[in-house]
Image (cartoon, rainbow, N blue to C red; front, side):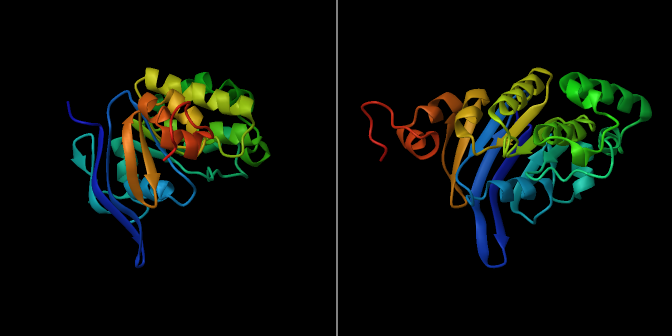
Length: 243
């Protein structure tokens, strides 16, 4: 069975500086795949290139279709969606209007179903649907950013640092919701500095350093790798070297 998303030999450069080099990955249906790595490793750059925000040399195939000729809006229409690290909400608009913007490509009846789905996933957004987005807490803003992306009924949701700056109890809520997305048939490509939380929820993982993948495999195997544990999880497995 072919992957839902397949990235082959991806290179992304800022001028003469190559930020992503020879990267290949795939995400299957109903799968959570995480990319972990330090700040500046190239994780966000890769997501932006897959979405079409940055030019990418290589090949991106989504749902059997070559993404190269497609603009961002067409990639969204195909079922690919990105929740950026800084959320990029319209802070002077209310929650409901922000969500409505995520439904601009779908029919009115489908949008009504999408609203119900988002409000079921995030009951707090329903309570605050008339509140200005800029007055929400950080956790609520993250829920709104995810909800807006889900309004378009994506097949694959790419999340860039969804736990950034959030309290631990809110992080737990966000990650629980990510698990619920997989159960509902949405695949997730997750970039996350909270490696421990990401590896607990993911099916598979890639470890990125300096623009390249240095390890990949089942998330439980990556979590038990001595080098990963020492570098990203903050401990060394008993009886193992971190080298």
